Image 1 (cartoon, rainbow, N blue to C red):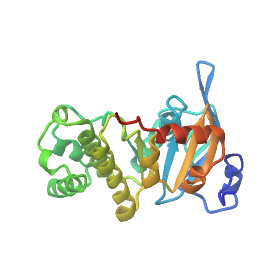
Image 2: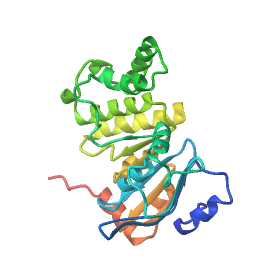
Image 3: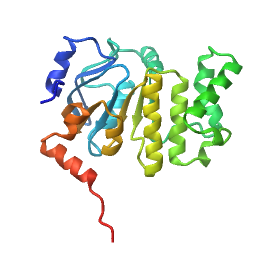
Length: 267
């Protein structure tokens, strides 16, 4: 048995412990009458990495979009550092998005701006730094993600993996408390996936960032996860530590892990 509460009990446990940085309590959402997520509860403490796992179409990315306030749940509570966000106005959500930022699959970079200018954009928007301070910080962030050699390039010239690394640098430029990653290893080769994993790990260990990573890649999750939320058919089959997930006897989880571990035989 795990020392962590089950999904059904996790929301109740929140009332008996220190308020986590992020919590979902009995959250549900439907599109056009079709339930996408139902009765989802989990929490993430400061400095932890949660991996949300499951097959395609089970609502993993929907959970991130609700946390950003892009979608509103039909039921349940979503809290950031104790603050309920489901009832916030757009102005209130903008304040949340300064603390919680998202790295999209496509990078969502500005095509007409160089890598350097993309990373500088959030800092210039805030207007709190001088131009010299912005340039110094941009150089530091570009160095952190290993993009010094493409600092003056336009996004169209970059590989998918490089775009995601630059998108992480731009996300960090906003100085968030939490970084959300939507399938960071999709459509990148294993070497780039490993580098992205290294980067997320550095942000956790050296910068204390809290991360929520949507992924179907078990090996990627094994490297990063303190906690795992496994979604299946819109419900949470598991929430708890990584080792409990890997050792789960649930047949749907065992099938997922077996399929992910399968490799084609060599000729």
